[in-house]
Length: 456
Image 1: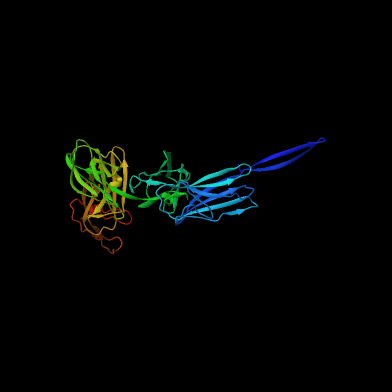
Image 2 (image 1 turned 90 degrees about the vertical axis):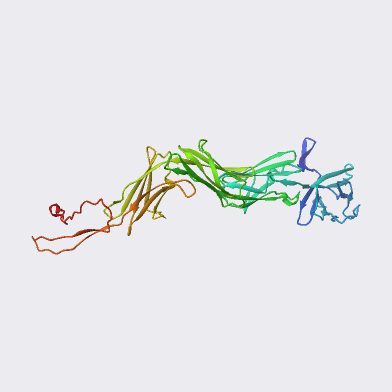
C-alpha cells in the first residue's frame, strides 16, 4: 500500500474533535523496457514532499550516472534530465542504453538520497533479463490427425515467466490461460528455466510456422522468440487381400505431402508371414508377405527423429462370387457379388469396373451377419458387350477380384394390323444375343392373354 488513513482525536471540555490524516508511503520504482534500437530504464519517485537530490543510477560495476554528469565517459549510456512535479510529489529520471548487443543481464540501480526525516538512500533495481531459448529441433513432424507436442525451454530467467509465454500460429495466439479446442499450453518453472509445451490433438492445420516467445518488454533478445516449422504428412497404407491361401500378399507404405523424407519406413506383420522389401525410396517401402495362410494384422511405422507415426491395417483372406447378369423390367443390368470370410466391414475397399473403367454410381454395399458383404451393381444404358469386375482392395496392396461378362442384347417386336376375329403373325426378335441360356420367347397380348400354343 502506498498510503494509509490515520485519525487524530482531541478531547477538551467533553468535546471530541477528529481529523483524518492521509499517510503516504514514500517509495521508488524502477522499470526497464526494450525499444527498437535501445533499452530505456526509468526510475519513478512517489509521495516525496520535496525533490530529492541527488538522484542517480549505478551500474553493476558501481559506476555512477547523474542526470547532468556521468562519472565515466561512455558512448553507450545516456542519462536524461529528471522531471519533477512538486504538486504531486512525483519525479522521473531515465537512463538510455544505446546498444542492443548484450550477452548477459543488463542491470542498473536507481538511488535516491534523502535527508528527511532521516538521512538514507532509497534504491531499486531495473533489469533487462538476457535469456536463451532452446528447442529439441526446429523441424516438427506430425501425421495427419494425430496429436503433436511442440516443446521449447527458456533459460536464465530472473523470475517465473510462465504467464508471459505466447505460442502463435498465424494470427492465432495461445497461452497458459487461453487455449482453443484441442489446443493447450503447458509450462513448468524450475532452476530459472521455463519449459513450455504446445499440445495439439487431431492436428489438421497443414504445414505451419509456429512461433513461441516471452511476451515481455524487459527481456533480451526482444521476446527471446524462436520459430519452428510443422510438417504435416500423410501415410498411404491399405488393407491387403488375397483369394488364395498360401500365396504372397503385396503391400506398399507411402509417405505423401511431406517436405522431407522420413528417416525410416518399416513394415511388420504376422510373425508367420515375414515381410520382404523389394523396392524402397525415400518416401516409400514396398514388398510382400510370403505364403499368407491366415488373416492377420500388419503395421507401417514412419520415423522422423524421435517422432514415430504408426498405421495399422488388415491382411484378409476372402472369397468372391458374382452372380450372372440379370435384367429388370426397365432394361437395367444387375450383378450381385458376395464377399465371404471377411472378419470386418470392408465395404470401403470395394470397387466395380466395366472394361477397367472405375464406376462411381449404381453401387450398393451392405455388411451381412456371418462375415459376409453383399455388393450390388446396377448398370444402366448398356450399349455394348463388356467385362464387369469387382475388386476388393487398392492399387497399393494385394487385392481380390472376380469378373463376369456383360452381355448387350435387346428385343424387338413387329407391328401388325389385323381384321377382327382373324389371325395375325407377330415376330419377336432377341437382337445381339450371343449367349446360350435363352430357351424361348413369349408374346403377351395387351389384354393379358398369352399365345402359348402358337409360339414358334
